[in-house]
Length: 265
Image 1 (cartoon, rainbow, N blue to C red):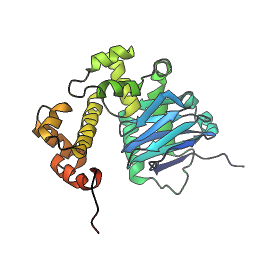
Image 2 (image 1 turned 90 degrees about the vertical axis):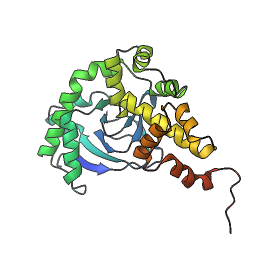
Image 3 (image 1 turned 60 degrees about the vertical axis):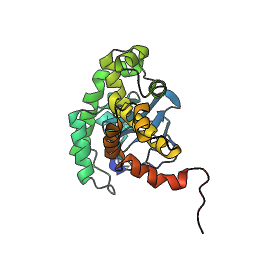
């Protein structure tokens, strides 16, 4: 019987809660959008895969996941036998989120540009060898730290959302997590695919979007409440993120979101 082959393909994860466990190792790297993932049902091993990070899921590890809107992921399924044959078993010794380095990012885009999702790749093929070698090189130096220090993303989110207008700075969040600023930043990117600053900006814009359809608060007041210096700064960031101005967003959603709306017949 032939040895099982690795499979390298593009996938989109649906926005529904799903659970899986399989007898092969898996690597998921984000290209666009986001997916949420929890490993072994452990909140301390929960993260989000975006365009700047990935996750290793060893064989036998339960993972709960869902897509957060439209997303594209590069997924590599690696049979344990292939990991042994290629000498890359240590890359799959532990579940871990990781930040992409330049080589892994380039490989992800190469796969997205030309992978044939209907045909398994040869275990000796250059794409698989390159991925396994780059992954092992990326993870091996950081293994000890990733096993001993966990970042509680839910706690970080709660602390930031408590006051978006004057949020805690990265140094304070790092100190509360028991990390240096550099280690906190690296862990945060590894587990979310975005920097703390970009994450804070997204939280602010999400809160602004909700406020715009919840009531008639003036846009200038919403801008200050969620941490922008003025209405113009919010409008610029909002348009870049959502593709609409705040006023257009409010008009688009007002009819269906506000209480007391009646549909004319």
